[in-house]
Image (tube, rainbow, N blue to C red; front, side, top):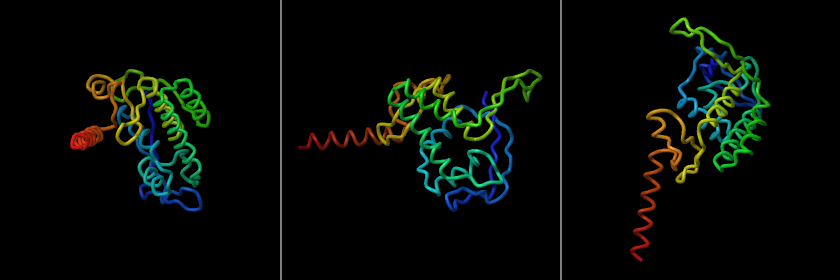
Length: 206
């Protein structure tokens, strides 16, 4: 169970002189364990950041700084390194090279602050539950990516080339993310098939 408490500036962030600054002191969000589909979506969105100041500010405005030092600016170079590294791990996984995926993942994780772990009381009953708590947002991202890669495969959409997770999951989620899936979304599947049909009609008309 991966738990984390995001710290986000309510008035957003700005980029200046190669660094990211909070416009106001970040507000701590309640400690939470996200549903897997939400956590996976955050990781995929992070890997798609184009590292422009606008994209980084937009992402930070929802999830906070990577290293979580609220009083200090965070260098854009840190974001570039982590985004490129997560994207590289997922790209290698999509290519089917499990050995290189493990190497790339280990390299990325070695830079992280790590996690704290403990058995703590469940919020709804008196039972103890195991909680793994990353020390910063960057550690949460890498831990979530590693957790997901243990159960899911990575695919590359045939239409838009975006990376996505497939296979694994439980119940309805398993059926929606079967290992043979070729598209990141239903919209991309429809667009691909429409284009394929259009090209076939053009060929038949010749």
